[in-house]
Image 1 (tube, rainbow, N blue to C red):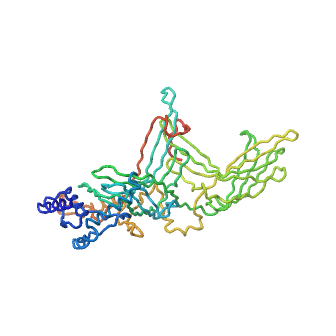
Image 2 (cartoon, helix red, strand yellow):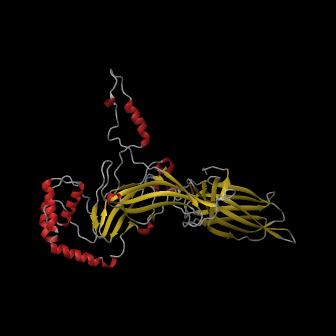
Length: 519
């Protein structure tokens, strides 16, 4: 077989009729049999650099002299058979398992994506059989998903339907190995033997604040998803990894400390005033691990009423909405992050005490608004009142004080480099950038943003008066160095189906006739 392949390649060189397909055969032959004649072909497709293979020793094909000098040592027939038998024996335990791909991140499971942060990792391909691969890619995307269940009965008797909208903020990919197609040609493929391959990658997230990762209320989510895949030969599909979710946390600075006073009159049965409330706080915005301090003063308006108990809940509100045919579908989920009670000494109509607690880190993310979701916080108080003299009755009143949650105190503003240049995702077209993992930082982008292209074209088209009109070929064009920067493009997909089976969702509240996407 080696002699026949060598004769075949020699015949190809003599005839000079090398095509892309025969070039691949010749290249495969010289790769397997380095002792055969070296082919000096200038038309064959370029061979990508060999991946990092942890099972099979790789060799550098730098020159014909180097190949001929090492052929007798590492690629003799007996040595090749020994290595092949060893590889088969080492893979005997996993021969029946299908090939698979996984992604490992530097930092393990504690990876958190933030603005201006670099994420590194590697794609691992476990091939249990020979694979023909065009290229191997790692992909990263961010998406917001909204699913609501709506009763569309009535005269039509359609029943419940699920309405789903998927908004993709960005979707980028990076070739870690293989060949790329060009606008004017197809891409060739190469052969990978069975074994374990590792392909490192690096990505820098732009200095942009996107909404944080979330999974509430049910049916609404914001996810940052990584996948890896093998593109097979001749535009065929290949192996794909599962989806890996990494949490994303924007950098939100709290407001400067400013004392403020919350005032409210709580009424009973929407008619008679019951309690006057005055709460003094040192600031409006808080971060996790910070101390929340409030001086609360309440006074019962009715002379026969006494305050017997006070409790509070630190609540996180998740709201989601989506436009449907009849109006706006709305869902809400309220999570109690922390709760407590305040001891009341004596039976008096006046309550005047300090309330303090540390803002938890668990389940607390910054307040934010996206297209379909909103997250905000408040502190709900429940006040127990006792009325009457001989025949007493108890009444419970509640009120809520709003607060804002950030994740960076205002006095630490200068700790984060380039913090004041962070952009909001709706106003930025920057997308995450993959780059060579051998570099510490991605290279500076010299391309121009698309919003500047119109003014540049107008300037180039403006010329001084000439004696004769310009011909077709003298119209100025953009110089080649003025390339457009790669920008993100949001896309939205709408899906609907019958609600029978599949995801279990409670029916959403529909505000009929209201079509408002703004919060």
